[in-house]
Image (cartoon, rainbow over all chains, first blue to last red; front, top):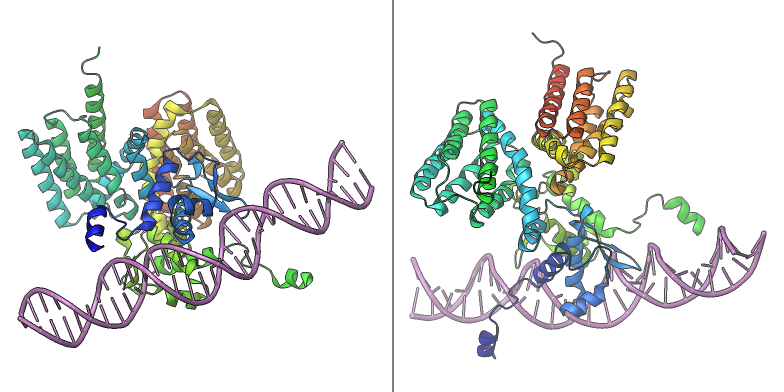
Length: 246
Length: 246
DNA sequence: TGCTTGTAAAAGTCTGATTAATGAGCCACG
DNA sequence: CGTGGCTCATTAATCAGACTTTTACAAGCA
């Protein structure tokens, strides 16, 4: 019995029956497999997933709080349409990054980042701690070293550290909460081969400029340099897509 | 009986026993009344709130998905610390705006807005629909009329419409999802007496500039003008706080 | 001291019963 | 023919209690 369990239970429901249902339903809705307006019944879901109503109800409650669906007596649970989704919910973002919506989601995140990071840089210039300054300059050095060596993985790690630290240094929790979002964009860019084999030295210099401006408490310069970073990045991506058009 | 019900039932728990518990716990955590690290037990909460465990469990699950608390077997539910909160969750935002955190929350939102709205303006310049253009220019006219007349309420309504439309016109759902956030900032500013009795005509002209730039498809100009709007607003608030210092 | 084992506490899950809201159909009345 | 109200069936919401599973903690053992 025990031995059998060990054999069969490759990936047993260790502690999360609830999670399975949640992710299953969440992905189904976000991917569009469950069309907006479609109605489901709790009991039906329970039998379909082979779990009790409690589990379904809890998952449904969570999804409802994310705006993915709504429940009404005598009707059932109704899949909500995109307009009411909490598109900032980490789970929703993850589900979208998983499925077909990946490209669209990364585009949204990128545009958002373009607005947030310059402000983060400006705020950081007035609120950064000495420790964070150290991390920032250290990250820039790492970027420089690994960029020259063409070690894109290590470069990415340093890049992530730089941006995460900067967002945290902004002293604004909402901006800091976008760390995961920005990371996704940076990771996605590298893993999609949208980076040149050797990062643009100018880009690294711009990171150094940001660190410098932040350290010397110059919000305007920090904001400007950060805007340059993002402009350069999008330019690099375009060049990558259209190698030498025109 | 029916008459009695009509008398006593001013605002009875119409459909939301769950909501009561959710809001109660949510506010308690967000306000700090329940300190991070504090552990509660489901059964205890059930008796304390006079509801069944199902209700508590569902509320707890939702709060856990917001990062406000976590549950562990044999331990109980633990209040999480701010770092893991989903600060973009609408409920979390609302709870913070309700309680003591109101000022801090508005400050965070304002800084975020400063980053997002210029980008929204730039994006809108390339994606706006003719209808939205009409709404934008209409809103600007309303602002002008009511601003001159000193009708701050009507002015606010037009201002809200302008910004909401612009965010939607950005064509980015994440940015559009920040409509509520931006509205809160604008409403909060007016309701806190941080507006001069007659809105600055220059501010209104800047709104017109944005609308104009968006309509003519000039992202840079739109972005610049929007940045000006926000700069002017924060300047006005400072002047308001320090009437004519120096 | 360090490892194993046992125990109990608490969340997790299941089930069945009951309550209450409400959409839809039906009927009477105009 | 339409309009308002009534009934009724359906479905979520809630409750209550039993059982299962994980795991912190401690007692016991080497």
